Length: 172
Image 1 (cartoon, helix red, strand yellow):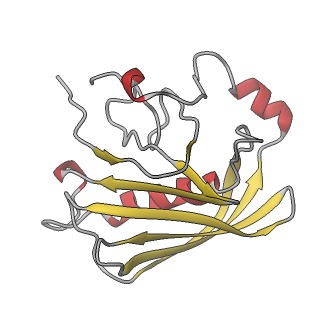
Image 2 (tube, rainbow, N blue to C red; image 1 turned 180 degrees about the vertical axis):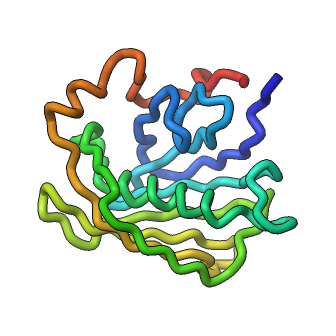
C-alpha cells in the first residue's frame, strides 16, 4: 500500500491546475511527486517540496534527475496564469547547472519565471533554493507552445486538468 510521502508546503499565491497521472503533478499517480504549484506573480510559479528517501541519489541527497524534472515542470508552468490555465508548453531545450547538493527530507523552494515570451516560443529560468537561501540548482529552458489541436486532444476528462482542493488528493 502506497502512502503520500511528500510533504507539501503552502505558498501564498493562486494554486495552479494539476492532472491525474502526470509524474510531477498527478494527484492520483502512486509513483509520482504530486507537487502543488502556485502562481505568485506575473509569469512566476513556485512550489516548496520535501523529497523523501525514495528519490535519493547519493546518501541523504536528492537525485539530480529528479531535481531537473521538477525544474523542467516549474519552468513550463511559469506560462500558466489564472487568465490562461491551459497554456501548456513542451520543453525544446534545457540546461541545468548543479551548484550544491539538494538534501532529502528538507523543504526546497522551486521557482520558475519567464525571461522571454514570443508566444509560440518561451524562454524560462528556474531555480531550486535551499532553506538558507542558497541556490542549489539553476536551469534555463526553451519551451514551445503545444498546438491548440493537440491540446484539445489531450485535455480529456480522464486527464483531469483542473485545480484540486487539498481534500481531493487521494491517500495513495
